[in-house]
Length: 230
Image 1 (cartoon, one colour):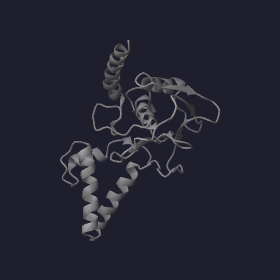
Image 2 (tube, one colour; image 1 turned 135 degrees about the horizontal axis):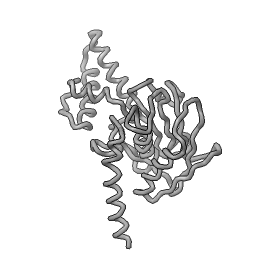
Image 3 (cartoon, one colour; image 1 turned 180 degrees about the vertical axis):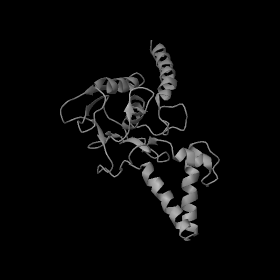
Image 4 (tube, one colour; image 1 turned 90 degrees about the vertical axis):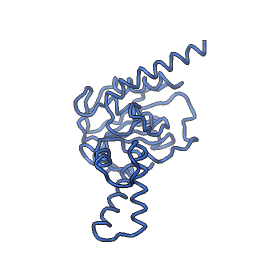
């Protein structure tokens, strides 16, 4: 899994080279390419420069997955019923209602079912972590990276990790756990990020407003699909 942290580390490395006077074609090319990729994804002028608009996007709380890494088309679950479980830890989080609601949103628009399990074996494990949690993608404390998920597969594949240091909530205060969960569950099902500002798979500033925009549209699509099957 390629995360936004790795892209940010490259940007920081390039900035440090410039600051120390190590200006050469290699760092200029790498830096500009990374900035341009990000600017293109977010609909900004692809200047390759750290404009105020670019910096504002970089500072938004967001999902930890890369925006430009392509998900392979072959990475998908080979079954229609998936199991999930919540790994208990130090973080007090939502009851089962939040997770059930998030999975229901996906089962409404995809021919899949999701079953909760309490025992260790499950396709998708949901957990909260602080800082470096030994998966190669450490969290960064409050703000910044909110969560990340892994593409479908065995072992850690499909697992979803939330930053335990965030102020999670079930309303408009702090970071809405349901909205972020729906987004991360999309990754666990194999979906990449979307550059559509109103899409639940938009990577930055994930909030309850995305659910308000997204759910009615997909319910309309579901009704349309159902009518075609009748």
